[in-house]
Image 1 (tube, rainbow, N blue to C red):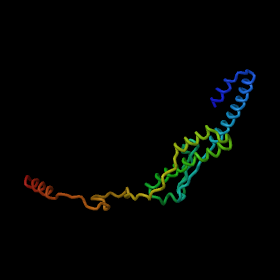
Image 2 (image 1 turned 90 degrees about the horizontal axis):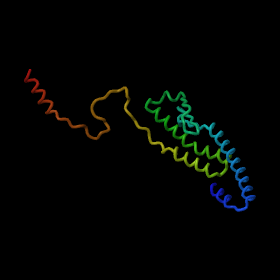
Image 3 (image 1 turned 30 degrees about the horizontal axis):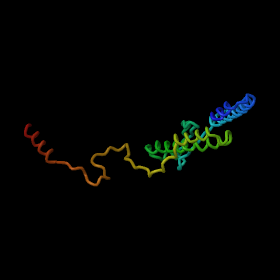
Image 4 (image 1 turned 180 degrees about the vertical axis):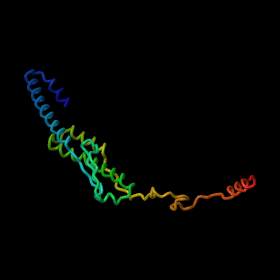
Length: 175
């Protein structure tokens, strides 16, 4: 855009320069209106994502801010430690969808504009597509207190009973 002004200012004929400046002014006013329309459209833009089970749905705005979390009856069947990761996964998927929606609105309002391409590119960097879902981790029930070693370990921890036995014998002798 600034190159265009350099070209206009390089024109020697003042009448031609004034005409080109007027054309540029009209072009800038049109762009300003288009960007104002884009701003209004993206201000009301919302993206909603739902957990595959239907237990959780979230809505984010064009800035990626979480606006709403809704839960359905299925959420009652989830373990408490599953709810948070599912909410975050929904939020990340919703945020990743923002760029496509803004790109769609930008095409309708400003067309294939350099600034719009930059905005969409920035949104894609800020909210990348989430990693594919990994299998759910199994965690111990937080209400159960367990002692000993984790059954998933190959070998149980080694303990020296001799030390405890000799200490117990010492304590017994003192008494």
